[in-house]
Amino acid sequence: MGPSGETAQFWEDLYRSREQVFSGEPNGVLVTEVEGLPPGQALDVGCGEGADARWLAARGWQVTALDISRTALQRAAAANAGIAWVCSDLAASPVPARAFDLVSVQYFPLRKDDGVLRKLLDAVAPGGTFLFASHDPRDLSPEHAGYCQPDDIARALGDEWTVLVNESRPRVMLAPPGTAHTRDTVLRAQRTS
Picture 1 (cartoon, rainbow, N blue to C red):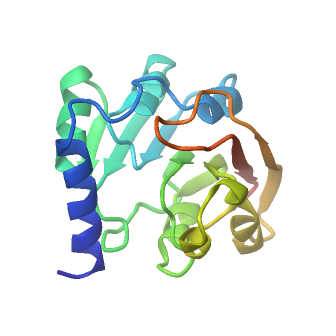
Picture 2: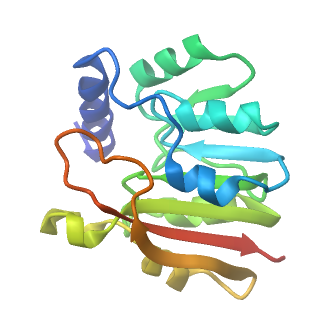
């Protein structure tokens, strides 16, 4: 089984291990950064059980929600209609270019070296927003060094982007049970052309 298959199996096993993995509430960074943006087409990357996608849809966004776990998507789809739930391995699948007014990447394990970041940045339409949130590296173990943080993404942006937020901040919501995450890193950038 290759890396993509191992990743899919990891997430399938996690979602099958319990009835509900996450709180069912939208991520605090998403709520803080997106509230007030005019709704349009949104891509929710690593949507899990769908809380962020449902929150966006309730505010008028047309949402495409991606996850590698079929189990997570089945749970998400059972709770809401009107959202395009898509099972996708981003490393092996295309993403429509310049198609989304918002690309939201909340705590998605985005590797520095697999090309997925470029696909996601290319998916943002002119005038659109790229929103990325992760755990602060100070709260992570060394094996997470190969994953993107906001500064990595900021360095990948070209002249057609304006960085609006690039910071570490205290978490708005409690960390998942069994973790010690106290701070989030956040990047919000707008594609200007």
